[in-house]
Length: 348
Image (cartoon, rainbow, N blue to C red):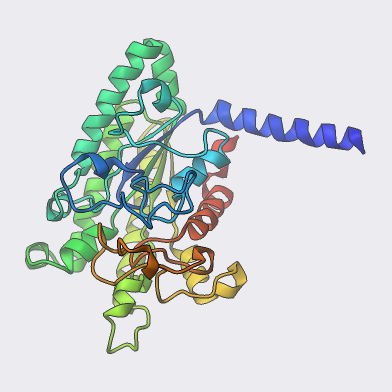
């Protein structure tokens, strides 16, 4: 029995060391789905640095994550044997030694479209790329040219955004909707995504995960306002997500052919999230249509009431934490699904 335990431990340690060797760092770009607190350090209302956010995080403190606890990228970093959470680039408590194995440049309320980031004055995607260039310079100083290049080449670069482009911009305010049909706007965003991946590639990134849209018509905020549909999911928004995801899938296939040495995968949360929403009991959830703490106002900043008495007692029974964002438990399930079905090749 002891021999079996020793062998099992050896296998697990070997698996973690292989994961570390293959993916030594996690570099993240995106919106509130992967923002670990960058918005705490810019002038915007799109923040979650107050209670009850973070109540189930280590130390029970709000971090700037739009969740009761960890977000998907934290779970992914842990699954790859890297670290238990990915720190935000703008947090002055961290330096390049902390960012060696992971960093997020993400900003809640942003999108592919610069006009989306303007809505709540957050960090646009082009600015996240500039931060990344600065990060690379620091890396070269800290590690030397050769090791810095190797670190970037082995790092898994994660891109997760797009929902705000539709729900906080195109369908919410005049402007883009008068310039583009929904399909044209999808093509516009996909073009930005393609351009961004080309830029990452030129900077040495070789392992990239391009994130898809969730079933955004099933977010509590959209269901709350769907009076005609009896507060059910909004099919038109879900269809937009499916159409856009199809475009990103084709983009992924094409870029894998066009860019030598790239390993680009499409990380699609749509199916697993819809499955959780449609069959919550299978995953241990009780509530899908309402969020644990949302007031149903708007996505960022004040989606949770500052008075924790308004939030549910046990977030693990809820699919959604606030009107736009999953609970820690949901984030963990989605991350596990992505590791198993999409990101597993990076472990080899």
